[in-house]
Every structure is written in C-alpha cells, then in structure tokens.
Length: 287
Ligand code: AMP
Ligand code: MN
Ligand code: MN
Ligand code: MN
Image (tube, rainbow, N blue to C red; front, side):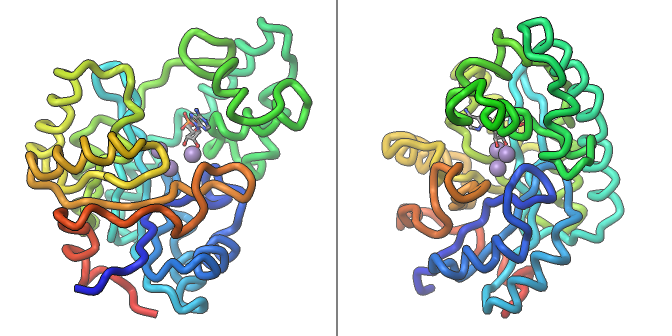
C-alpha cells in the first residue's frame, strides 16, 4: 500500500479547537493531508460538517471522536476512528461523558477564585461558544492568557489547572470498557491516544491499561503524535507489536499558533507497523 499522509487526531470548535470543521479541513488540505479525522473531545456533533468539508476539499475522511476515560487515577484518552457518528449508543455515551463538564468548570472557577482569580467560569464560557457541556481546561487556559495572567497556554498548564495547582478539579470520566464498547458498536476502531502522556500510571498500571484495553476490544495505539519524543515512538511501536495493535498517527491539532504540530507534518509511522487505516478501508468516506 502506498504511503499516505494520514492525520487522524484533531479538534474543532465543537470541542476545544479554535477552527470550525470547514476551516480545519481547508488547513489539513493545505498542509498535504490526504486522509483526515476530526476527533473532538466527548462529542460527534461536528462530524457532519467535517465529512462535508473533507469532501469539498478532496480529502478522504474517517469519522472520529476522542473519549475521556478514568483509569487507575489517570485521565486516559481513547480515540474512536471510523465510527458511525449517528450511532445512538455512541451519542448517548459521549453525551453522558461530557455532561459533567459544567459542574467541574464551576468547581474549577471556585478553586481559581481561592487563588485570587475571580470570574473564571463566566470568563471561560464564551471560549466554549457559550456551551457549558463543552467547556475544557483549554478554554480556561485561553481566557487566562487573554487576561494576561499567563503568557501562553503552556505556562497555564504549568501553573494552573493541573494536579496540585489552582483550578485543578479531579473528575470521573467514562470507564475504559464503556468507551471501547461505544466505539465498537458504532463500527469504529478504539485507539489509545498519546500513551506517553499518562505520567501518573506506573509501569505496571500502564501494562494493565494495555491488557485491559485489548481484553475489552481495543485494537489500536497512537504511535506518532507530538506528545511523543523519538524514543517514545520507538517504545510504543514496540508495545504495538507486543499487543498486536494497529498504529495511528495524528497531530492533535487544536488551532494555529497553539498546537505543538501542524496538520500532516509529523514523521510517518514506523514501517514495521500496520497502519490503523488499513483496517478501516470500508469506513473511509472517499472524496
Ligand atoms: P479537559 O478535557 O477539560 O481536562 O482538557 C484537556 C485538554 O487540555 C487537552 O485535550 C488539551 O487540549 C489541553 N491540555 C492538557 N494538558 C495540556 C498541556 N500541558 N499543554 C497544553 N494543553 C494541554
Ligand atoms: Mn484538547
Ligand atoms: Mn488527548
Ligand atoms: Mn486530542
């Protein structure tokens, strides 16, 4: 199979990205992406726009989602690729998962207020298009930057919103097995996103994550992502082979000037791995 430029992880204004699905599709196209997936956090409401925009841009498209899961005290992200975004079980599952965001945001604002930063909920809400069910730490981060509290979102995530810092509120997301089930019943492949990011998992907890993920029907791992150093790409390529997992590649693009990687510009997957899109040929919507 010829090498294709697949970028299967990105966000839009339907979660915590700053581009609309149409703007994201145009940007992906401009940077050479051939196969694209929009994978908004805990929601599929942008999928119809994304699929239409992909077609208009001449991009092949896989419908996607990134589901937040709680596992062993860590928040783990599970990508669903090639899902049917109209599947009722998937839609209900992600709606339930994002439903707790409003209460969490109110608690985050109370925690920031204790640190002397008032009005964070009202401040961050417009950054989430006024929808409290969408509100993410990213929206708080952008508000803190625009207010001059921090120079950039990187500084926000060092000083605020993370464990032990003002604005952090622990949260119970979906169960791993539920997220994988919703993805599978919707016809998709479940992929562990950016595994090197789960620093709270001990080596044994990480091994448990992979074995439980496989036991409940998970089939893929994101190997090439801006969250991984070259050494971590090698590590997770080895884990992909060990657990017989399909491999994915994605920029996790959130917006111009804010993301660690541009659309379509990451290195290719190691040639020894099976790309996840090879198993999803019948789910690709051809341009
Ligand atoms: P939430 O789902 O509300 O907990 O927000 C998680 C989002 O915050 C992630 O999807 C990223 O977009 C963003 N995020 C988390 N950690 C960082 C970080 N260290 N730097 C920049 N963005 C981050
Ligand atoms: Mn995000
Ligand atoms: Mn993620
Ligand atoms: Mn993401």
